[in-house]
Image (cartoon, rainbow, N blue to C red; front, side, top):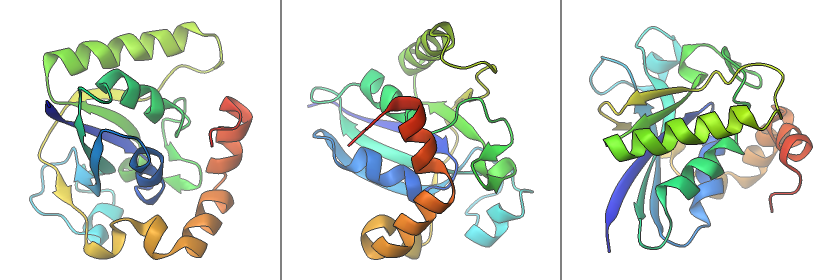
Length: 176
C-alpha cells in the first residue's frame, strides 16, 4: 500500500467530494482551503476572495488501487476547465480551478493530462486550470464536510441549480 495525497480546487468544494468518494482506493476526501498565505482561514475569510485561498478537496488515496492519473482524469470531468473566473455561478478567486501537486511526478502527470485535454479539440477556449505546487491545506469547518451526505436535498438543488450537472452531462455524457 502506498498512500498519497491529491489536492484539487474545482469551484464549490461541496460538489467535489461525492465524485471521488465512490472510488475504491480513495480513503478520504476532505473539503478545505489551500493556495493562500493566511493560516487557518475560515469559510467567511475565504469567501472575501482576499486570502488567496481556494475551496479545494484533499484526497488521501492508495496508489496501488487507484492512480493519481485516474484521479486527475476524474477531476477534469467535474469542472469547466476553460472558466478562468470561477465555476458555474460561483465566481471569484476562491472558486477558480487548480491542481495542487505534491511531487515532481504528480506535476508531470498533471501537465501531461492538461496537454492531452487541450489536444482533444473538445474545448474552443484555452484550459484555464492552473497547476501549482501544493501549499498547506486547511480542512473546512465540520458543516462543510461530506455535505452531499449531510444535506442531500440542498446539495442536489445546488449541483443542478448551479449548472454544474448539466454542463457535465453535455460535455462528458452520463458519468453515473
